[in-house]
Image 1 (tube, rainbow, N blue to C red):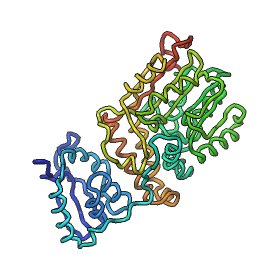
Image 2 (cartoon, rainbow, N blue to C red; image 1 turned 45 degrees about the vertical axis):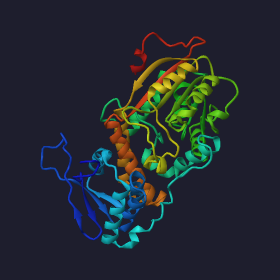
Image 3 (cartoon, rainbow, N blue to C red; image 1 turned 60 degrees about the vertical axis):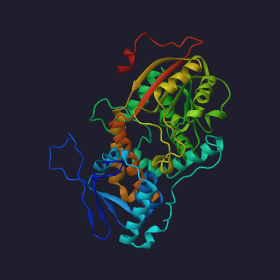
Length: 418
């Protein structure tokens, strides 16, 4: 790398006509020499066309999603080289020279803008308005309940699991997570419990069945709500579990004793974070407990341009340092009582989801199409890589409204007793 230009490719690039640009693998302490560069394959001219028209992450994302760009071998090895490109900046002159070189090599058709993959999301309307948030959330969750069951497993729990041992199965670890949340909230029979962003209902069903609470779960996805209600009826819990299609900003009525939000606040947005926590506080009784389980930005910087994740996975999703959430909680009248990092648990969860996807890839493609399967494969492995490198973290933050008795014990010993 010199003067912002790429002197050595960290990957080998193989083109549709058989030509190859040999790469040099970056130094990696995990390997003792003799390591070959990972191979990225441009299957046809669309890959170059995407990159010429949208240089950077969006061009790469479109080429990956439509299948014109792929990789041989371990995709994780390719993803491990991504930071090598961080200092590369191409001037307008550089881009024109590349376009001319591409036209000579691939023909003038490479200069035409290729179709954008149909699953790309570009939300419209005021950011984080009720209408736009509904559209963004449904883009991700309303694709196929059967697809989510294939990837997530029988628990249908779409958030970081909690592994007591590395050998735990995904189902065991997800049950540990659900139980840990209920224990941290000290749920008790007869209490009113709210789950904001309940997904397919795993937490409210667990809380009602094992802790005797009267639970309400809210989601913006009609597909999730239908399945959660079916699960409640099938388990004989529909008298204690209610599922609503609603935004947290639309709730009112008697206060709840305990509230959880698991993997939801990533959709809230930094500009709405104070309002979100204020709304939660207004839904709780004095002294009530609130647990927020969510991804936080650690070493990585907020993106300044559209990303693969924002266009293909979580439209309008935003990540913040956990300190921002804690500050908002304190401003809203919460006393922060407990913070736990689950960072190492998320790559373990994600890689189990990837295994589920790849083991049944043909079925997944029949359910949602090859573009979305390629998207999920890349998104989950890239996320695992970011958690491994401590660019992202996962925190459970427990707070209590400080205007009443919270009922928490002096120690946390009971959390770890079976």
